[in-house]
Amino acid sequence: MVPTPITVRVPAKVNLHLSVGDARPDGYHELVTVFQALSLTDDVTVLAADEPGIEVKGEGADSVPTGSENLAWKAVRLLAEHCGRDPENPGLRISINKGIPVAGGMAGGSADAAATLQAVNHLWRLELGRDELSELAAKIGSDVPFSLQGGTALGTGRGERLVPVLARHTFHWVIALDKEGLSTPGVYGELDRLRAENGNGRIGEVEPLLEALASGDPRQLALLLGNDLQSAAVSLRPGLRRTLRAGVQAGALAGIVSGSGPTCAFLCTDADEAVRVAAELSGAGVCRTVRVAHGPVPGAKVVSEEPANRPTPPQVHA
Ligand SMILES: C[C@@](CO)(OP(=O)(O)O)[C@H](O)COP(=O)(O)OP(=O)(O)OC[C@H]1O[C@@H](n2ccc(N)nc2=O)[C@H](O)[C@@H]1O
Ligand SMILES: Nc1ncnc2c1ncn2[C@@H]1O[C@H](COP(=O)(O)OP(=O)(O)O)[C@@H](O)[C@H]1O
Image 1 (spheres, rainbow, N blue to C red):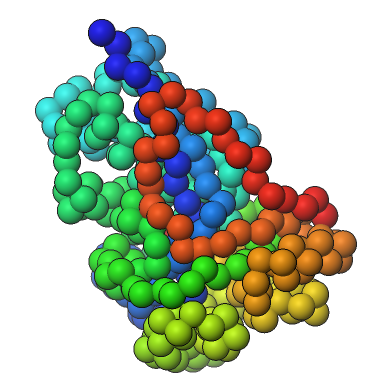
Image 2: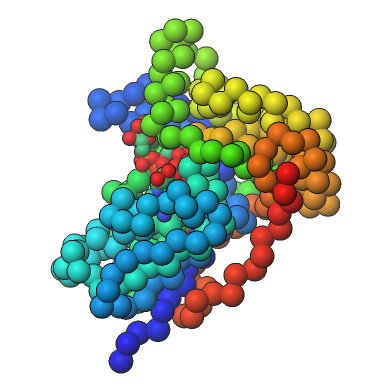
């Protein structure tokens, strides 16, 4: 009997705190980061098929590779090797429906890899546990373990070592998508360059932000958002300065570049305020599209054993 296709829904992330240390001998930077999973999601469906392949639709699909460079495909190969199947011929098709901006600093590729690990684990009835999946995830990319886990988490090492963090209440965000992506290694490289030129300006310790998350007060949290990669992203994409200013002028409590950018995330007092800020920001003409989102939400999760009926994400076109 042919197994039923499995669909996994997986969230985007924003880094509420991203403190970047020096480059390590392996080329990665040591991080202290707090991830939060947001309600912008991708759906990944895997099904058994004689003809393997990947199809991608949705947000930014044209710029996503459909060959072996796709992180979802890397996940399949790794899982096949791990369980003694032929990685060159896994007998699977993958269909990705993107709602997470591509190359936007929201871990969209990592999300698809995490979803694929979860879906294939289910489809092949491998019954790999959380820890084993997380170890495989870290081999694909630093952000992939968090995409599996979701919620809010403290990440150390290169971002792959996770501890869940208590976040009381839901936080409401406005997400501003830029026209074109930024390369993650390019942004880390720009930070190294800026630091070599100007010295090491770094954001503060993470503890006050953890306390703000536990209190659930968005006003307190807004004062503590910080991202060491922001200056590098702004240096490569100076227009982001205008976007960040426009979000705050529209009434957000604070704005931040998400990870390596160029997506900007604006924290708002509540859900109604986020819709109002999104409408005003979209009228300001500083970004391609504006979305509202909330977090924390769960990590990669099976939503159906049929291709999912995807809810239309709330969005406002600039
Ligand atoms: C910046 C962050 C913040 O969460 O996310 P994005 O903005 O890309 O979503 C992450 O550190 C991105 O993680 P991820 O996208 O998984 O990166 P990886 O595939 O592991 O690494 C890609 C490249 O990024 C750089 N890199 C990544 C992680 C890290 N701790 N130090 C680094 O210097 C290295 O140049 C590495 O070769
Ligand atoms: N499934 C995927 N979805 C999106 N991008 C992918 C995927 N697989 C590989 N990529 C590549 O990864 C790059 C980074 O994309 P993404 O993970 O969305 O951004 P970021 O690293 O900024 O969070 C893209 O430019 C694309 O070439």
